[in-house]
Amino acid sequence: MLNEIIWPVAALGGLGLLLGLGLAIASKVFAVQTDENIEKVRELLPGANCGGCGFPGCDGLAKALCAGEANVSQCSALSCENLNAIAALLGMDAAPAEKMVARVLCRGDSENCVSQYTYSGISDCRAAAMVAGGPKSCAFGCVGLLTCAKVCPFGAIYLSDKGIAAVDESICTGCGQCVKACPKNVIKVMPQSHSVFVTCRTTEKGKAVTANCKAGCIACGLCAKKCPEGAIEIKDNLPVIDYEKCTGCGTCAEVCPKGSIAYMHKIENSCKVSNG
Image (cartoon, helix red, strand yellow):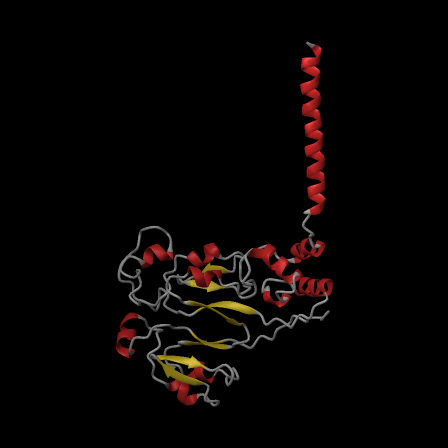
């Protein structure tokens, strides 16, 4: 009777020992070598997982950096200190990254743009845009329900006092999440150094524009005529700025009768990058 119990238990124990030994050997033979730098780089990345770098979150970028498949400058949200730390850790060159920011290309606020109805549905720009194109009479105007702000991982977007989206460029990293969320395509990511930019997207002609928005571009062409560098041309009833020619003098903004071109003082990139 005792033997009937002992032998099965011994056999089971022996089998377990053999399986355990096999697993231990297999874990050594098939072990995946991990780069310890990946975790170090990951800790230095901002952790916003915004995807602005083109990789699936900060984990994806950390792996790509350690594999030599990305450049540290691809992360627009990195502080200069951490950018330099990663470059030094991986022994790579990091070209000075120009600060990118999101800008709202619309001035169709409560003072300038006519409303065609009062929207009382879901507080979402995409939902509102599905109802007759949105409450604004201008089909290209900012809806103002801040779907862009809801997806911004840095809290850089807020509602202006006149009811349209506005961006705090001191916080914005140019990740582009707001651009993807905007159903009206009135947000664009551009270098912060671009001191002039067009704040209108309508392609309609002058009379139709004026009927809907006081600040809409009427394609008068004054900006193109007065630009001393010949950096502007009118395409599809909108000014297009050639930034390779533009010097940021602001003449176009001064002569625009509708205020459809914004002028900001040039901001130089202050991030100093030490290579290697």
